[in-house]
Structures are given as structure tokens and as C-alpha cells.
Length: 98
Image (tube, rainbow, N blue to C red; front, side, top):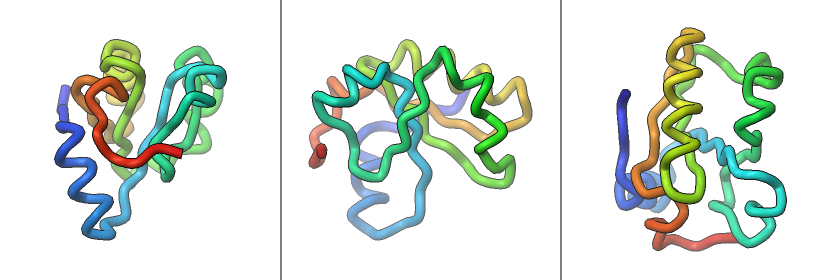
């Protein structure tokens, strides 16, 4: 499983790179703050909504601490998607949140 640090993600955002972030936390968790460009798809709904994703794009998976996003990353990889887990999740995120 590929991983990326929160610092690397923040640098990519700051540089204006086009990246795709999926936050797999529950809506009530996301309501406390999320990375502005992140799309919320709760882990339990991922298998039903993966048709919204493009297999040609890479997705950075995020959760609270990195556990659920690791599960999501492995699941998407098994389905033929390109996914990377953000280490430490939102607990390690030092960038802006909305």
C-alpha cells in the first residue's frame, strides 16, 4: 500500500497541483473540519459510490488517524483504482481546514 505524509499533501495543495482527496470519515466527523478540497465518502459507502471515481486518477485517502483510510486504500487498490493513504490522518494534518 502506498502512503503519503500530510506534509507532502499540503505541499501539493500549496503548489496548486491537481489532487483528489477522499475523506472516509462519517459526516458528523467531517463537520468538525476537513481539508477544503476533500470529497466526503464515508468508508461504509465507498463500495457503493466507487463508480463516481475515475480509475485513471489517483486518490489520497484520509480519515481521523489513518486506519480507516488504510482500509479504503487497500479496498480501492483491489478494485483496480489508484489510491494512497495519508499517514496519521486529520490528527496529523497541519494545513487549513474548512
